[in-house]
Length: 509
Image (cartoon, rainbow, N blue to C red):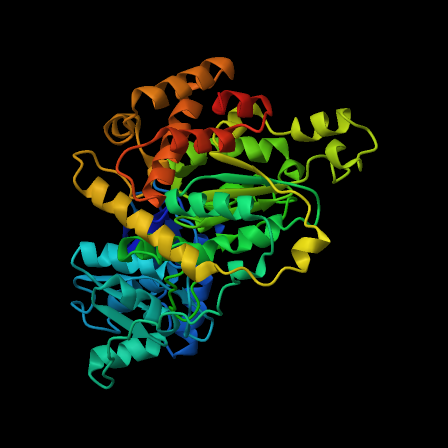
């Protein structure tokens, strides 16, 4: 007789079903697990053996074979323990043979038979619900799994499940975790001066555009970046579910609490490629995926290793982070908004301020660490001048985060309404417009088209840069509440695209 139960292997945030098959055979006592398990899965036999002994059960002196099908799918992690243990309980008649019908299980066993919380409970619950199965999971993961919407059974230990099957214990479905209460975000009103940088930040928030601040130390670049999450609207239910699945795989959901605030990730410039893009022994999500539908802030941008920055080019373009392995590819969603901050040169102030000891070579070498293809994916470049004493003595600005966020929300609603009537599937921000959609929503009059054509020819704009200028102009027009892109919208977009002083003469001509 073969006992069966379903569990899951995680391919990115997708929970792929795995059929756990247990059979007892005659011969020398031996416990083997087959089906391409890694070392953690292979060690399940010792955890299961100890857990059975702790609750007064002994494995029969037979050959025990556990097969994890499909056999060519790599199995990683300790969450296979519970499924193997439950199938064994059926095989030794400790629970009825029909106790595991239409059931899936995920969880890690302790040596005393209790269950430890495990990563991936939310994707597993969603996968089980899609297959019409009930999910058995650890009690400490029940609040997280309940967000999946299906039938969840949260158990504290193996003995609790045995008592539940015998009718001695009635298990209630767990309640979904609470929405996490977070501290208030810093207010844009705290930033004195820097009106140009605030304008760039507002445009970036309204259209989901990538932005790089460049200025001397102490000019407020990081301060501005930390105010961006407060300008962004809350997550939609679909976005919240996607982000929560990534956080579940990464083990970042505490007590099943979800947050409707968009993620904000700020890794140090010493971060490795695996930390930023994803990878490691189990291909875990990196910072770009943890910032999905949110903000990835890279301070001291040129200090990041060149190889790491170049690895961002593909996620910035496609919205996915693909981690390649010898026998598979793992894909995590990574549609984030990149905000960078950098000094003009390694000395800090740059030649214009007279603080550079090696001008102009220092500036050229420092900014030269950022490749052209990487910079081509940035929509806005904003120079942040030093803050003067006069700026610091000014009273607090009239407008703060609340007022700017209201304009951003209005612009995003305009975009959502526009995209809802389009035939092509798209996201609801201008930064993600496809080439076909740009032709539909970024219509120019003759004066605007001539301006863009002259700029493209004089500054050798690539096709990507040409389209990004149009997307940026579309966002500026949306902030103004105008249906069509006017010449001044396009002119402002071009000033953010290029910092060459020669641009001014073209735009004012």
